[in-house]
Structures are given as structure tokens and as C-alpha cells.
Length: 68
Image (cartoon, rainbow, N blue to C red; front, side):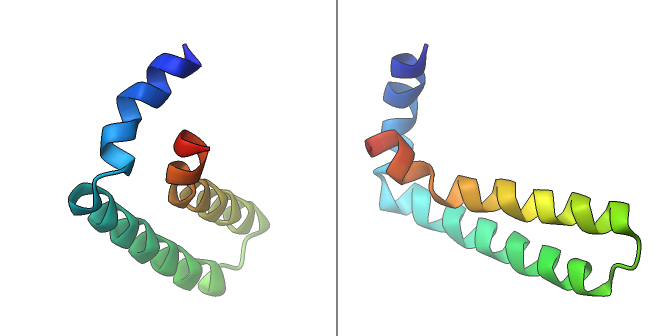
């Protein structure tokens, strides 16, 4: 299964016309999540937002994981 997923995603992560806008969108979402994190008061909301940033950052490393 892992090999199939890697081969399916390789054309996406190695195509700058597709992958660079994807990275820009992820970076924008991280920035918006940081703003929400700074304004949060509830611990549950803070933990959720921290998890969101963690997932978004893992998506930014997708190319390294697929090509690794």
C-alpha cells in the first residue's frame, strides 16, 4: 500500500507548478492558525489548534517523505 501511495503522490510533489501553490496554501493556513492560537483562552481550543499546526507542518514535509 505504501508503495502505491508514494507512486501516486510523486507526480504531485515533484511538479513545482502544483506543489508550490500547495505549500503557499499550507503556510497561509499555518499563519491563520497561529493567529487563532494567540487569541485562544480555552485549553481544549489551544490543544486543538496546536494539533492543527502539527498536521499542517507534516503536510509541508510531504515531498521529503514521498521522495525519501
